[in-house]
Length: 189
Ligand code: B4P
Image (cartoon, rainbow, N blue to C red; front, side, top):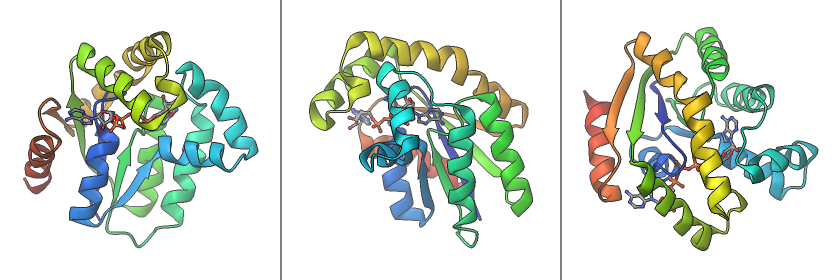
């Protein structure tokens, strides 16, 4: 099993690249953003609570997303591997993920950090607001809040994996295919 994390700021292209990677490598795509949006769509209690935070560009509570990941891993124990997209977003989530994978004796092999300049992130999120009508992309204030929260709460996760010698930086600007090839090279090395 090969477990990989796609890491980076909102709008860096984690979801875009994860979809292509699962196709090529037959891994299970595990996006906490997608799981939360499905809960909202299905009008569940969890979705109703998560929506309040997501609309403001805030993170959903660690316990909630860790619980969702726990279920996903337990329901796919024989999988070839997972691509974690948008998770972990806090150091607490990273520690919990290590513990869950320890039980399976299948640790994270690499954390790929997709790096994109802030002005390009903002441009992409504004475009996504038009294309996908996501409530968390709808105004500049929320977009800026998401970037601020990324810098405060999520960026320390990069140090966590650097200390484990697992962090690899990927230039996240250029065409989707160029970035995909950069990531694939890292997965094969
Ligand atoms: P996510 O669903 O993870 O979304 P994201 O970080 O905003 O975007 P991503 O990086 O996947 O970008 P995409 O490929 O779409 O999170 C949404 C929210 O859910 C969070 O803000 C939070 O509230 C909550 N949440 C999720 N996980 C959580 C967790 N673990 N803990 C707590 N809360 C959590 O790309 C963006 C746009 O750029 C797209 O329109 C795409 O087409 C375009 N694009 C991609 N690559 C491009 C390229 N190379 N060139 C030009 N455009 C490109």
